[in-house]
Image 1 (cartoon, rainbow, N blue to C red):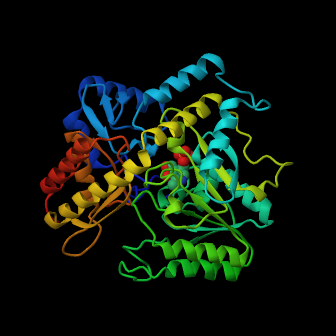
Image 2: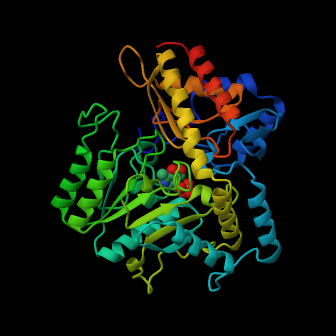
Image 3: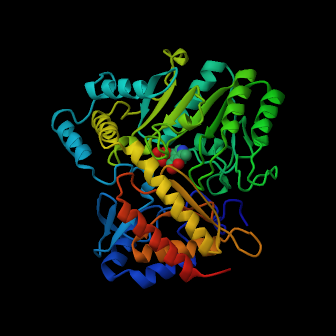
Length: 455
Ligand SMILES: Cc1ncc(COP(=O)(O)O)c(C=O)c1O
C-alpha cells in the first residue's frame, strides 16, 4: 500500500469521523430527498475530509440552543464547535455586528479601529496577572502559530513539549504539536523539535495513578525539560476538551515550576473552553497558575465571526521587527464588535455563575445516571464542560461502538453532541440553556443509553 493511501479511520479522535456504517444508517433512516440532494451537491464540490465532508445533515437555521435542519427537525446543540457559549445568534451580538457592518465592515491592517482597541483593553483587564499584551487572529490554529513563533523569538530556542492526544488546530504547525493520529498520520515531515509527553489523563493514567492522580506525568515533563535543556515552551490544553480530562491542581503547579526552573514558557490552549465554559473566564483560574501566554478563540467571536486571540506577558512584547501574525483579518472591526458584545453578555447575563451552577446540577444528574447505566464508566465535568465515559462493564475497555450508537440515537431524538477519543460523550451546552432544557437533554442521553443496552 502506498504510504498515503486511505486507511480505516481511527474513531478515537477529536470528533466523530464521517465514514462509519452507523452514520450511513442514520442518514438512511432520517434524511428526506431535499437533504439528500443538498448533501450530494456538497459532496460533489467540496474536498472530502474525515471530520466534515461528506456531511451527515444540512442545517437551515440556528437560534439559541437550537439548530433546525432543512426538514424542520429541531436539535439541541451540545456541540456547536464550542463557539456557542451565548447560544446561536444572540441578539446583542447580531445587533453589534450589523451596526459595525453599516459603518466599518473592514479595517485594512495599517489602520487600527476603536472596536479592536476596546476589545484588546477589555481582554487585558479580564486576564489575571501579567497577561497584558494581545494579538488577534482569524482562527485558533493561527493564534497557536503566533504563540509558537513568539516563544521561539523570546527564548532563542525552538523545541516544544506538548501532549499526546491533544488538539491545537489543523494547520501543519498545530498538528506538529498536537497529538492525534487522525491529523498526523501520513502527513510527512512535521515541525522538528516538537516533543510529546503523556497527557494528564487522571482516569486512564499511563503511570497507573488509578484516579488518585499523583501528577507523575508533570514530573515527566520536567524530566524532558531537564534532559533537553533548550525547550522554548510547554504547550498544553489547561483542561483537555475532547474527553474532558481535568488535571488536579498539582499538575499545573508542577508544570509551572518546571517551566520556571528550565527557562521554558508555559502556554495554555483554552480555545474551546475559555470565556465561561468551565465557570470562569479563563480555565486556568481554577488552578491558581498563570501562564506566560494563553490562546483563546471559538466563542470569542460570539458564534458568528472567526476570532481568536493570543494573550501574552507584557515583557514578551519583543518582536517589533518581525511578523507574528500578519493575518488579513487581524483586527477585524466586525469580529471585534462581535467579541465585545459577547464579553458584555457574559457579564450582564452572569454566564460564569450560570455555567458553574448548571454544571453542579448536570454533574448530580450524571452521577445518578451512572448508578443506573452499567455502560457509564466515569462522569466528569467542570462548569458546563461535561463528559460521560462509556466502558465495557465486563472488561473496562472503551465502549466506542456503543458511544457512537448513543450519539446517533440522541441525534434522532433531538440532541447533538460530540464523541471524544472514541468513547466519551462530550456535552457542551450553550451557557444560556434553561434548567428544563438541560434536564430534557439528559433524559435523551439516558434514554439512548438504555436503548443501546449493555456490552
Ligand atoms: C483545544 C483546541 N485548540 C485549537 C483549536 C483550533 O481552533 P480553530 O479551529 O479555530 O483553528 C481547537 C479547535 O477545535 C481546539 O479545540
